Amino acid sequence: MIQKNIARKMTFLLSVLMGLVMFIFFLFQALPGAEEMLTTQRADAKTKQAIVAELGLDQPMYLQALFYVNDLSPISIYQSNSQKIPYLSGFSIKTAQYHYWLKFPYLRKSFQTKQPVGGMLFQAFIGTMVLAIAAMGIALLLGIPLGVWAAMNQGKWNDNVIVSLSAVGISMPSFFSAMLFSWLFGFVWHRYTGLPMTGSLWEIDELGENRQLVWSNMILPACALGIRPLAVFIQLTRNTMVEMLAQDFVRTARAKGLSRWQATFKHALPNAMNPLITSVGGWFSSLLAGSFFTEYIFQWKGLGKITIEALQQSDFPVLMGAVLFTACVFFILHTITEMLYVWIDPRVRYE
Image 1 (cartoon, rainbow, N blue to C red):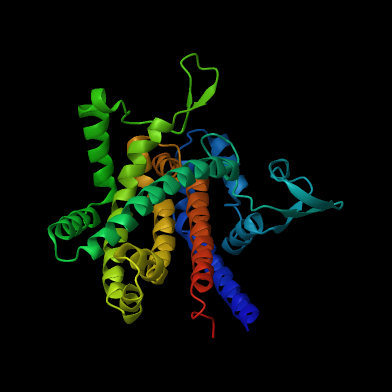
Image 2 (cartoon, rainbow, N blue to C red; image 1 turned 180 degrees about the horizontal axis):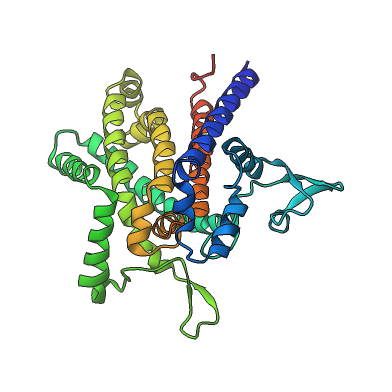
């Protein structure tokens, strides 16, 4: 039964992904005037002709869609003289006319850098993943203890202060907190904090020869990105714990001699984890997909920065690849979250 439901879910995800591929194609390439939008960034006719040939814009619309799906498909067919083959990797069978490839999805090449989009996105994704993990770590390490503390002191001054501050955090957009943190801690109080306004995880040294890790560049963007999930985790943990602390099994544990802290962390908190796990999965996906403006404000090299720059430069292969790549990451994380939810709570099973 479980295998059947997993197969059904995977079929659903693949159908959604296929629909997204078609949406991206028609949004960026197949709309009227798309050819002009894709080629006006280059003045010479030779470059325009090369772009048109690369994307198959001189072909009928249904063939353009097939070419795009063929590029993305793990099993693809290309003509033996295709110029795309040197940029692919994987197992292939070659005949006189065609190359049959078992490969990773080919996201084409950037208009600006002429580099394969897949490699560019993978490098950017590492930066985004590191930043999202740091932001989520801050939110969890502070949010759960503060939420538990507020629940244990329900109605007291510290509970009111924590709830009020978390309400402010929830209402603060990430781009605003990014600008605030960058200006306040990176500029106004820079001589006290020593933190830069902008920077990435990897930077070139002063001699321009070697790359070096600069962990201090991650502090401000991670804090700015983690404000909203931190506030959400505080209120979610607090509200769930208030309900759990009023349950009979907690009172029974106290009656058997357990201290207040032992009953809270041994009995109440594990039963309050299910809603939190669901929220963590959703927020982690949101951090990966929604850190665009935060990365751009701090000039953090990640998916957000590369996507905004591609939009400014009309680099549509990068833009299309970034949207598709982000959607795939979101689907994967959503599936993992559901599996964890079932594993944590045996009562929840697929029907």
